Length: 232
Image (tube, rainbow, N blue to C red):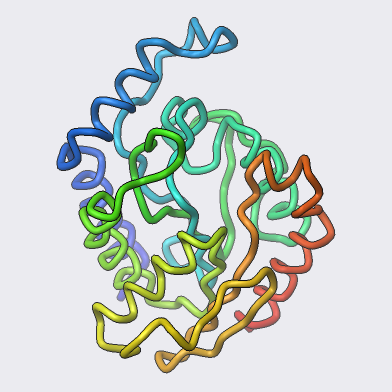
């Protein structure tokens, strides 16, 4: 398929994602966060809609996270942009050759991803960063469509256990695996899946994980260096 057709596929899908209002609790929360705001962002007009994926339409590496941050992606409209998780993630992506620059502030900052695509299991900011099971299920079709459109995919880097389980659930829906029980989440764990894709697990780059040292820059960088090796 020609690259321009792939881009068109993503544009159609992203329009569907952005217009979704299926989960009443999430709609209320994302809009409430945009109304209340943080003091630092009082002058900012929040995105306050579902957040679509972002990156290279011909990526071999997919980064799969949990959900938008209430004052990060829910504010800026782009995954991992404008919060502490993104401030930890993008310098590592830049160092390992996946991002054009180390800093992501807003959708007009010039950031481009190379051979990588970033998305999440849930597309709206959930209260307490904890989506309900039915909210994850409501978003699952969007993930299925994204994965179908990523024709060159070789590696999925799961950022946290929810991302890890989200990809395994996708494989079950597609009949690629019968059960998730053989796949255990652990930082740095690697699995060669029946569809030929590698699943690599990482702790989520949340502020809680990075400030406590549970996830260090060296640990995170090693994950993406390995993802690049596996993609080749």
